[in-house]
Image (cartoon, rainbow, N blue to C red; front, side, top):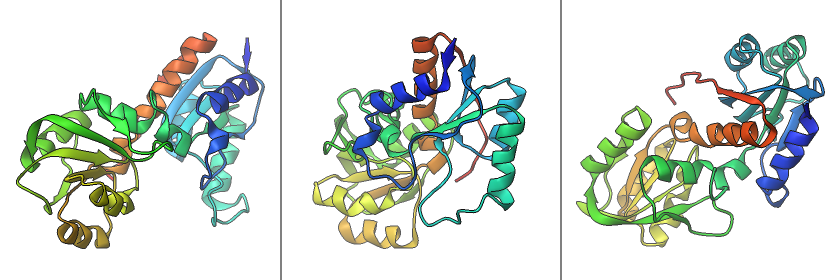
Length: 249
């Protein structure tokens, strides 16, 4: 039998969670019971994810987007209170890893997106692993990259044209990382992919001369949490199931 503290302590170390200044606490967020036989993973600890985890018989819900974000109200009331009450009522521990899961060089969201796109020579730009880049082996077009992203992620990305007709240097950071577009342009990248888009991103892409692709926050961050769940299941000899909660953003 494995305990929740064994699983979360191992994951903290594996993801080097202590190295990140994050917007939320990483690791075990809600401790309900000790023993774990089944892990359910999901992108976000929504009410729907908790209910699906309960139906699946989970002892531990592992997510990318958990609770207790900076600047959010602290009282456990309303929506947050209902969610945490559901965790206790159903005997489910909650653990979350945010930036450490984005950045990990093997199972992180950025690395997993590269695998989905079959970019085998991809690498992080800096040590924190939050911005990645690739030099494509053949030149690409915006239409070609749209088709590639749609085929890999199951949704058509929003595209803002700002770069050359053909390009080979592409950068990305999953989730809500559209603000990295300026850094991507400074690095000489000709296209940049993230999950979301802001009003200012359109103007930045056009003025910086770089293509921007908003491929979906949820869609770009599905795969790191699945990889983590599978790794933990194998490491600790427990079962794992990924729960997909549809999200168009």
